[in-house]
Image (spheres, rainbow, N blue to C red):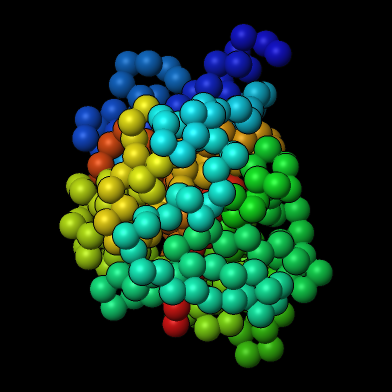
Length: 303
């Protein structure tokens, strides 16, 4: 791998983390030429979109290395370990509910936060026969099937909204997704189970407000273990956000133990949609603009 390729790969991973960790210092805001501060970290053929100091857009183009390893210090240590079951990441002080996905029989913990009922675990639905939108657009971290049992799957935005179903809906026919804007229904079920849906921006904002606002929400939402460099949260409300990492355009995986990204049903334009990005090194949480082809986690909200 060339030095330039290695630097580019490191830059994309680092910039995505800046999206979640730069809220306090403002270091994640990009200039029109795609650089951060005085450092020429990432070149781009188009100017990135920036909503706030916590949001950047990454294309994932021209990056040649992945980060599939992580700290393995375990449940009580500093960092991520695949050996810890997902149940051990939940807050033991929270009285969780549960729901069963009738499509595949998987059981998920749920939690009520204010007037909302959320899945307290990342979605792990993978049937691309029943749901063709998933074909080639969802993955287990590092392409290891056993990892999905711990952190759920990573989905593109097109998969998350179930674009194929939207396009063939007789009452609302459309052709949309990456490269084409969508005319979305008021509630987007997406790939969520019946009775649940992919939360839109306003619903994510309601959650952030309930847990204290953008400047403190991240600590409250993060799980109590598994985050890199003493980045664990208080998980006061039982949302238990795991640092499941992300997948970029060229197929590489990054940021396990360092980042959690969750898609919303809110689109920006042909190529970008909104997602909640949580990092290990800040308490700041907000929705930013992200390329639809990135692989992020999905949390479903009860109708």
